[in-house]
Image 1 (spheres, helix red, strand yellow):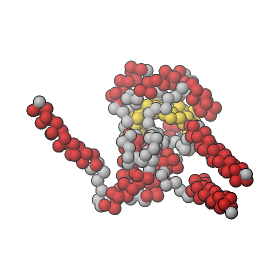
Image 2: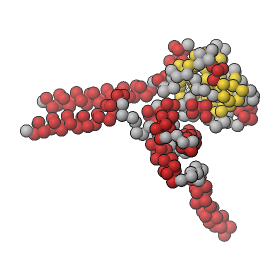
Image 3: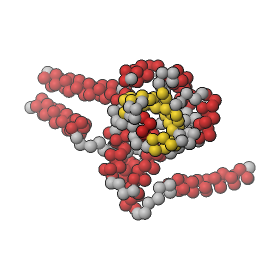
Image 4: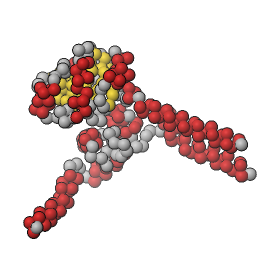
Length: 164
Length: 127
């Protein structure tokens, strides 16, 4: 009888450990990059100007990883456009051809304050990016939120809006 | 028909060449560096994949991380430094050999702990 009681207790403990793991895994705002300062970088924008991490030091910015070859980026584009009325959105054009990227922006609309060209994905790796799209909320040079995948109303309200 | 057969034969003969040229993407000065590269890329989990190392994945991010590991090996970084670089960006999740610290204590000691308890209870029940 005692054996059954102790076994049940142990199995219950294991269950809660796994449950905790699943809940933590689902909470994308607990990204390993959240809380860190924006990585040091020196790159070009899509229109050929120099840009560095200093750009982020004194503003609140939504950073969006996108590419012209990314279907989901097209899906989230209208929602990001609606956000652009209230917040600066900086694009990181990820592993893309600059001509294709410019054509894509001309066709679908360019609400980005600036677009950093990241052809090799080096800046993206420093941000812990796994692909496109991904979004970050950067407040005064510090990353406060990070989501993987499509940005939408639910994710904005759950992970980004509370940190503004 | 005859021409089709020839085309298939030529394509099959070219296949090993294609595979060979892909495996030559990372060139090392010696075997030690090469074996370090393969050991490390097998120990780093592909962050985009459900399960699998960056060595076994051809996802774009896995290719990029292999390139980073390659560049860092050539620049003289140690295995620990390279792993720290990856873990700093993608978390302990990316390391197939997580460090032995207070956060991972349960992960490392948990199985042995439960084995001991169950063993103790089992033998106590038997007696």
